[in-house]
Image 1 (cartoon, rainbow, N blue to C red):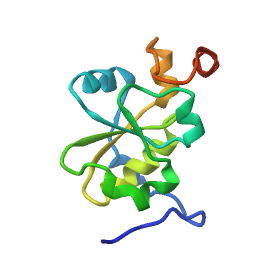
Image 2: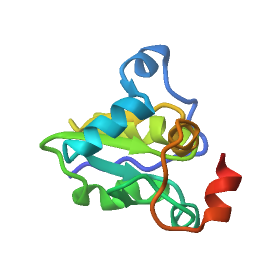
Image 3: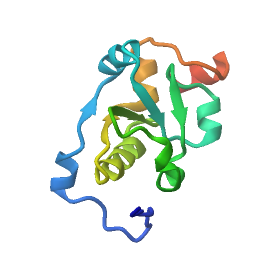
Image 4: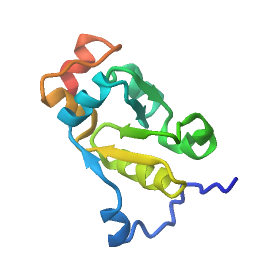
Length: 130
């Protein structure tokens, strides 16, 4: 299967690419989680360990190309990071391969800003993130 790796020399996404990545907010994500949505957290492992949204699966962004076979392609995938930047890039990558990936705008910080709790980690880590 075709694989694309992240490149530091990339010129970045075109304006058309930017418009082609849908985004949802924390409220929409919360409703989707209640309905059993697949949530992909692309933060680094140490960030994920500090706290994550319920049901999230951690695959750090740099590993998404080599672990993409673990990501379901038969339904919507909600991609989250800390603030929304990495999740946007990971969503754009996955969409190239037909995955219905959407970026969670505001990321985990946005989730916490709505007063929702994260799973794992400790209270100090969740407080700092706010």
